[in-house]
Image (tube, rainbow over all chains, first blue to last red; front, side, top):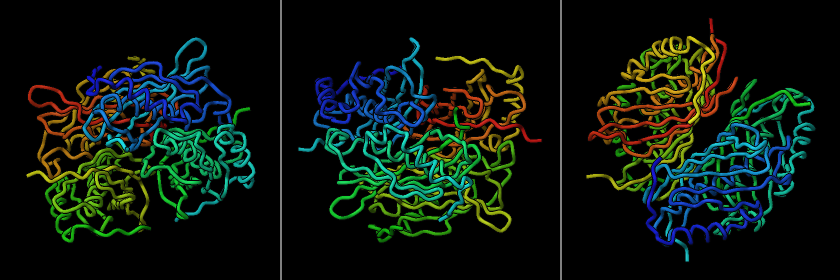
Length: 147
Length: 147
Length: 147
Length: 147
């Protein structure tokens, strides 16, 4: 498992601040539970408001958690005064998203000056166990921060 | 542009009912604006609640609209008493999701007994014009309906 | 269907030259059959040498044609003295790759200074008709040409 | 790292036989170097015949190796008298494919009765070290064997 060094000594502060400026994360009740250079875990409680026709959490909502986890993981390795943008991602849905809580775990696979590739996994916690429910591979881009 | 015939004469009723049973779509304010065999348009008004750190709608929320559009488009071509499940999708983010309203337009590329492949596009309406902001290719699976 | 203008007036010469410098294309017998700004068709005859266990052409070989078609289509819109690199792609296999000849048809969806997104389709010609057998969405990157 | 049990006691024989019946693998000089339930490593020597315009192995050829690795890995967990079909895959190209030899390493992420999801990595061996050059996530389908 490769570990990375952050170029920006304030990576924790700026990554957290970027996350906190996302109203979508607050609307979904998602929070950061672990943050290391190139690695992040987010958590989201179950809410009926985000379910589809079978009572499972909607694949798009799971994807919102996975995408943000990838974005923050990539962002921790970017230089100061960067902004991060998602270029593309691919999600495989492996099992129904049912559970009391969901964890979105991302890690950088390949950091780059312009493009960073991340892998992420979504887990559902139910019956006292963690179940892998979805995976993502995503490409993120570093941009000079606006303003 | 291939057009399809629905196997289920009640495709419109059951597709609409499946959509209406998704609390996530109500939470996001998404509605069906066009529904034909193998084709569907959904619309979503802008809400600050779904934005990320730059004020654009979060890629995961755009993906939720695209995924549901693909699911409903695929569902219109499935036999009666089916349920539809997303196997996987891939999203490319082409431009910032800013605008007053968003349209998610899906069409079936290849229907199948078990697996159906759909393409979808997300458009943002601003400055009186429609801008392509994202694309999806998704694989959907037909299952016998539960219960 | 959006049409594009080439920035490089010599786009046809340099795109063809880039294609011709790919030994893999010669090994597979792939040739350019149509080339416009942002659009390209390649053709490949059937060869048993590229088949898998059921006698159909291997998905990786179909992907090689689709990827090159995307790369050349993107390249026609890049400035002079660029090189083109594939960042990522996603392929859906829709039908068995059987036929006498295969066509790989790519078009640019979104050109960009750094990143260009292309869609491509693979068709198999058999029984006097063209069958859609695979689709690709790919992300290509412009780089300053080496040397 | 999850390990799996093969349902088919002859998994090694049938997986090897399926691989050996692929002319494309012979044409590319690819061979099986490790085979366990749900896991496979393939190897391919460098050949100029498979390069693109910069002298690196073509992304489609790398994809052919990754796709076959995923297919064989999925196949080892399928019941007797199955055939395996690729539904879709997504490849990220992380570094130039240069080296003396390439290894394609796949493992099953989620086996299923109908669909199996695999992850794979491509490594290039040069300067006495193994470099990660590409990743794939793929969806494979089990079918009853023909004939």
